[in-house]
Length: 553
Ligand code: ATP
Ligand code: MG
Image 1 (cartoon, rainbow, N blue to C red):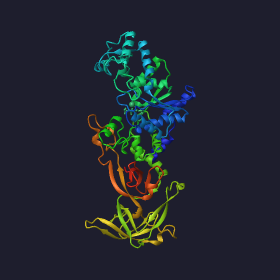
Image 2 (image 1 turned 180 degrees about the vertical axis):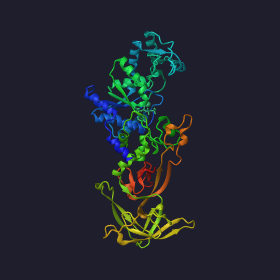
Image 3 (image 1 turned 90 degrees about the horizontal axis):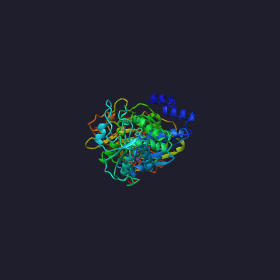
Image 4 (image 1 turned 90 degrees about the vertical axis):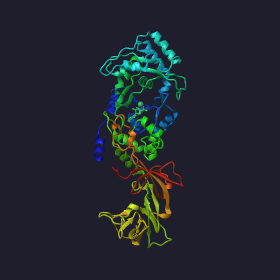
């Protein structure tokens, strides 16, 4: 992994940076303007985060700006709930948009331009049904056939289009099509549909419109209206580019340009909004922000930081060919950030009691440890020690293998930040389960008192009177298959849901954690990073496992 990352760093400008530098150098543009254009029909996911970091990042780097434009041309699937979540997520990622805009703000202008195309003899109203239109398109190897309505006069087309707008026709009765070439080698150029009739309430324009522009007709023109210089989208849109350019050319408007990069795919992850919506609607997960979801709000609840996601976007880079990124790279970026910033505490997730028999019953003492060894200025924390402790059940073994350095009968370990103890006796219940480990401690091993004696093992622990019981939600990847895109057509991707993706355990945490004000996940020493969930209360703390200390795979 380190090797790959080093190579990444050595890499020079990516192809988009090259294009932009060239455009600025030769004076094509004085400054650049990009946009992030989500359709408000779902919550943003890590793929969108990549696109956001790219669009906003390029503008920032070259002193330009970025618009947030909602691509709200399909009233049926869109909602203000999604608009609000998208704005929250972009802000949380650390970006500021120059303007908040909506494709629906341009409906009047788009309509006028459609009339312009009609007047130029470049668009016509078609009465054919959806099936007839599809059949007439032909195939990749066969040219299409002209619609019988293709030669309507300009006057008739203008009149029919006005009537479409005025609600005189039913859904599906008529569409507006561009008049390009039914034999064009690019199927998208075979008289594409520009407008269809939809009687639905739009989240912003209400019932003002009953005709709605198609993506291809709207997108480039919206870019042009805003004077977007570099319109960056994912690779599957490269076949749409000729159409994008055709509209701009025929309408003689500001020439925005479209550039494509490879969409982000992640192992063990589905990213299509349709599938994410299905997981939410049918309760396979707890909601859009379930910490196992690849949504930005899910990642945030899981304990991901904006910094880690921006680092990830940078490491992934921009590619011209589709690929799949290993989920462990995302986790690596998260650890990179959390290691620097997380406060450390002790927690015991699978406790067994340990009694120090030669330690006075009513005595307590307090040890000190750095809050974060990576950041001395973070200060220190107090750790209470006493006669009765909890340790992790698997930090003790009755019959250990050779290289086991943790606690064992007759063996010594150091309790982190505290004394060396020696196991004297094990108490079991009638089923043979260990219920108590009895130890002695070496008073001369107190840190800071004279000579440091070392032993091979160090384990973490908690004093039984200084803990809070907590619910800990242990997450694993949501799917079991690395390449979820390889699920064959017809097979249900839900067959690959991981039944073990959520396990809830009860454990103990150092009560000081509940006063932690850092706002980022904390490190449970020797275990991993954990963040308090919003379900958490001081009575009943709840933690989400963010990520382990090391890659589990
Ligand atoms: P759907 O899943 O409904 O097709 P979408 O993922 O294309 O939607 P949009 O809201 O249209 O969602 O996307 C907004 C922007 O984010 C677009 O520019 C799109 O290209 C980009 N984007 C979406 N998914 C990814 C991804 N996996 N990787 C990189 N960019 C993405
Ligand atoms: Mg889309």
